[in-house]
Length: 150
Image (cartoon, rainbow, N blue to C red):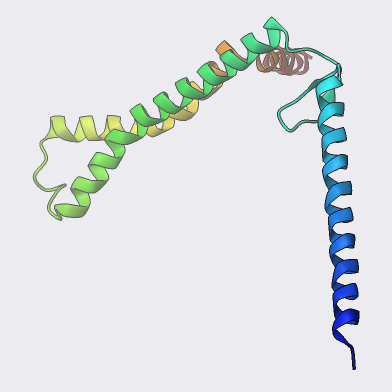
């Protein structure tokens, strides 16, 4: 059976060990922070080191990409909201198709075609904003034309 002195010395040893561990961890963290502050290279979003600075061209490309995503989403909303309205009208009014005039049916047919137009417009939006997509599309078209003319 342990005596009180043995318990106290054991607890002192464990507390000394834990303070030593805490002290070594804090020193390691401080050294890491100093290393990060003194590092002269650049890093990406995740923190991986890179050797290239963020240039104006990269910023412009990021802005073009963001604008492209916004335009694609706006076109998607414009093309799909009318279709959603027609579907909701059909859901809540079972006699929806019976009550429509010929002109209304033409408009509804056009609204249904807008979903397809969204898919047609997307490559043009990509081509307007993405240079790489534009060059690859030109290469693909030229390749197809070469095989077609043979």
